[in-house]
Image (cartoon, rainbow, N blue to C red; front, side, top):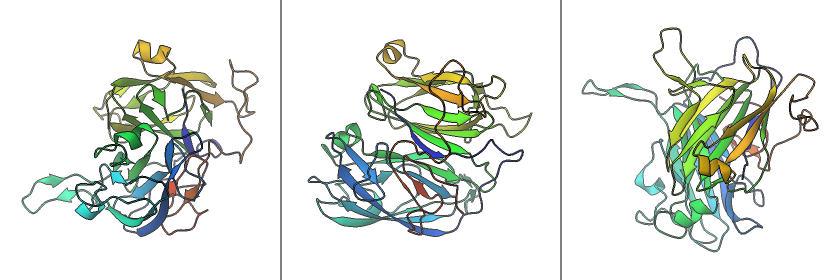
Length: 331
């Protein structure tokens, strides 16, 4: 029941991690809603290349993203995003008339902003965080049919100075499946790489996300800012429908290479297959305890998908990335 979408894949993390640049760019991508050959549905950056989850969209605080959306399916579809700013015309709901009929097109505009004080002196938080998007009209006016069938994806909004990962994986708990797959690829890293997890929950049930051998801070980035940071350090987090969070870990830090399990810790859920492996390899590609299942060679991609920038060049570095690998994180 396990699948994960991945972006990135470089050599072991540098001594000083690269950081996110300042935002403020206006970007544009094209996205398609498609029926998949197995009867499910997905979003993609190119026709015929939709994936579950859909492309991971990466932005920096202050960026604006225009999404030229085409619905190739035989039912109405839409895009609705959590955590970002948009006008009602980009809400992606039937009630606002911002959905797209079969064969139709629409431009959705998502904006992000930096933190700061309001005119009344109160503090307005910024857009930085781990968010997500999904359909809101397939099946019902709440998009229940679209979400169940795979019309969802992740959004990462970074703040200037946030450490950038070597690899990013999107994991979606959807009822009793992960990424709508009964069984699928595990996710991989080399000892010392900085790995980012984008974790989203959909469906009818509450779950927990637990990872063996690795811990993270329960805050916006999953990283401690220093020895006085009061954030709890955890390895298990309760999640419910429409929740999203993310974090970064250094693969194998303090524990070494190995086949590290991740799973829902509701026992009946993990027994039903909500579990997978975080395969942390040595530099030679071997994974202790998982012989015969070494890392892919450099350049091999993960599961499907593609990559694009918000400037519309299909192979550039990272504003929107699908389930395959991309080379970096653009500014």
